[in-house]
Length: 345
Ligand code: MRU
Image 1: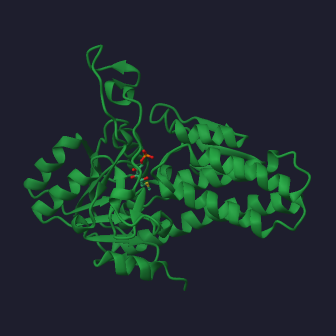
Image 2 (image 1 turned 90 degrees about the vertical axis):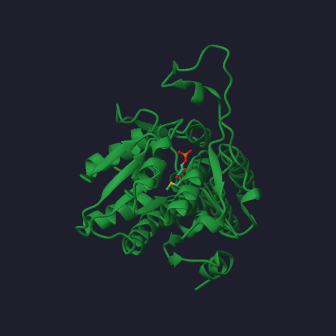
Image 3 (image 1 turned 30 degrees about the horizontal axis):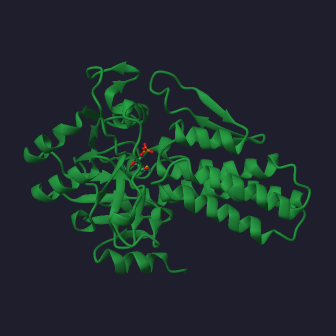
């Protein structure tokens, strides 16, 4: 199944909190349930969050008792505010909710039933486009991978983080499908362990050779010359090419530059936010300190210890070799090439 799936008027999500131990499906019937699934990271990863939020808007339309278009629009605006408050950094969430709202206003003069159907169809289009986009990025990105390469990867950017297939992990998948012999060094990705729990789970199923490493070991492998390329995803790319991604990404980028290792970001153009001029303007989510102080509910620090938990960091554009999008690979100067990539075709 897909990570984000619509079946008979219900949103079905693979509950990522339970992996790799259990494969559990979480069913969401209301926008409130979708917002909660995003907040608690049952669904996570920028494109997956975007698609889930789009279905949250479709659910808001289906559940609204309004019998006139204006009443329905008011309910949709309330759902949009709720969904947008669930997580702050991944811009795909805001992009998808705004696209659903635009669709709702297009249909304003139609009857509410037509509007409801149009919104379900739009959410399904967002989900389908995500899969298509990932496959295109896979094709572009795989040209960067040579037979025999060792790829360093951070967090989880696979089928779980998207509707299906994956962004950076999608590139790795495509290279593997092309018959290239590759090895993946999987950063465990503290504190939520998306690498050790989710990326390792996906790579095992795909039969792609990998080794999980502690986040702090990346420099060791780069210094030994064992890493040919670093591939990461993104939660928001600013207009100047600065990239917010899972905390620890910046460290990898600085290390990669020091060791002359190419550092690529793989993300759809829906992750680019032209309204954010640079990385300093990207809101960085601070999560509960317990995610650092505990692992799966078991305390690992002495009682009374406090922790800080920024979920993302910003990598300045100057550390990035290229950005793989569904429109091709963008190289510096990023501000210019990003603007060109987003111009209507
Ligand atoms: O906090 P998460 O797990 O939602 O963070 C996910 C990441 O940082 C991913 O690298 C990013 O969303 C790109 S996923 C295709």
